[in-house]
Every structure is written in structure tokens, then in C-alpha cells.
Length: 194
Image (cartoon, rainbow, N blue to C red; front, side, top):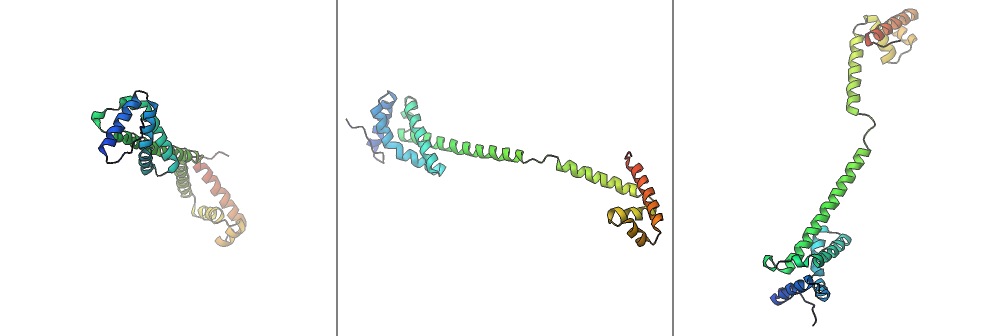
């Protein structure tokens, strides 16, 4: 007896598929071969519709058909047709594959982000820098006007001692003294040890 079946809208073919699944559940390899021939295209179609990747669709279809062979004894005709049972297995397996691929991609992305972490905490570095700047501004406020002008011109504008002296119209020695005294006061205010 030839056991190949064409599945379509033919109720007799659906009944035959149901019978073939029942026989495959009892270990009949020829019955399973007929089930395979009858549903392989539909299973591949469902997998391809979900996965959109030919290679993965073929893998999933193969897995589903192996699962049909292994779990045929669990098929219950009162819960639906054999074709619906098989295609439901195919759909679930394809969706599981999509989720698995997405989870793997998310893990890879997370791992890549963790590897790209800076060696230091940028936020705490910025906060620390701002606090230091505030402390320097506060300490600059403790200097005399002439000391603050000299320090600002020399260290914030990058002028040489001679250029500071020319800008303030003061002798070079006076500028050097004011800078030295201003830096000593800043050092003490900032708590820097010599």
C-alpha cells in the first residue's frame, strides 16, 4: 500500500494524514515518510514566513519534522487536525528561533557596550573638575587685586612675566613678587603641600 498523501482541502487526505500520524506514533517508518512528504513543504513555508531566512527556515523545518516523529504519540485528534498540530509546532519553533536570535544579538550588543566602557567614570571626573575649578575661583577671590591680575594674566592668558609687567605698567621685579606671593596664598588656600 502506498502511503503518500496530498494535503489540500480534501477531507479524505486530512483523515489520511491523521491516520498516518497515528501509525507513525506506533513506530511505522513508512507512515512517517508519508507524513514527511505530505507536510514538509508546508512546514518550511511556515518557518520561512516567520524567519525570512532560507537556511534557518530549513533548519527549523528539519527540527520540527524530527519532533513530529518523536512526539507523534502525544498527538490528540480531538484537539485538532494533524496538519494544524504539525504547523503549530512549526510556528512555535520558528518563533522560538527568532527570540533566540534576538536574545543572542542583545547579549552581543551588551557585551560590546561593556567592553567599550571608559577606564574611568566620566561623570565623577567632570564633577571633580568643577569642584576644583570652584575652589580655585574661591581662592582667587582671597588674593589682592594686583596679585589676582598678575596670576590671571600669567596663568590663564599665558603671558610671560615680562608681558605681564608691560600689561600692568609695572616693573618686572614687582610683578615677580606679586606672582610669588599670590601663588603662595593660592597654595595655602587650596591646601597643597609643598
